[in-house]
Length: 102
Image 1 (cartoon, rainbow, N blue to C red):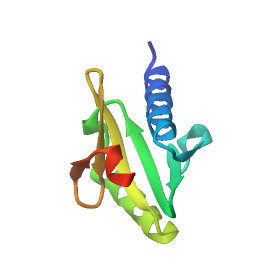
Image 2: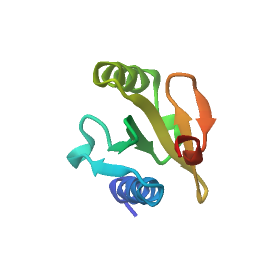
Image 3: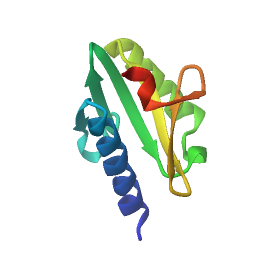
Image 4: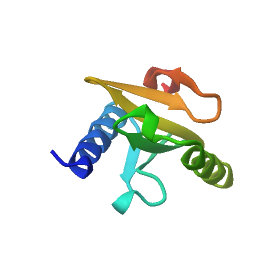
């Protein structure tokens, strides 16, 4: 499977996860400027999906944090480790659960 197909599959899984938890989710075409925009209860998350956490370098992190600041949103990295999806607050570099937003 190509890298593009793996990334798209992860984006769909993350999209579905947020939708199941009551978020409105918009998937950005060609992942520009972010992969997903998720909104719920006056909270907006800008999400960058990476198949491996190591693909999220400091330059990309800085761009995401800057965009989130401008948009008044939170920056999130979603990545996969084996079959499990992890959510990481890009600002604090700490993991969280989607249930934290319910």
